[in-house]
View 1 (tube, rainbow, N blue to C red):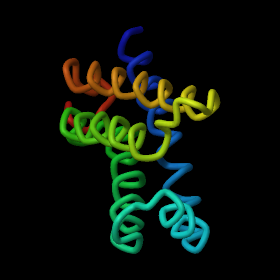
View 2: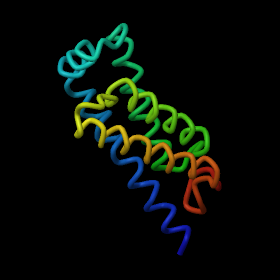
View 3: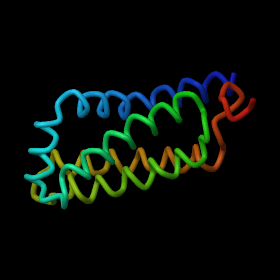
Length: 124
């Protein structure tokens, strides 16, 4: 039963990154405008890195491929995006998003520690 739970957990954790990465890939102008508004340095480069990390990291977690490395990458990504995009103490909504990212980072650290489980490509 724990192997099935690990698979479902990976599916759920990957979903937000796959959806976000695909949406960013489909709407580059909106994403670049958001990056410029947030004063992210070099928005075109940040855009490319963001789409790659979100889609490739999401796929890796979903499939359980290099799970520990992908989980560490996405844990760091969650912390970095929490600080860069959501740290606005006066905005309660943004602070909820910041804490959501911190929570996801914790989940990814658990995945890094425990691995992808029996139903993962890592097990092959």
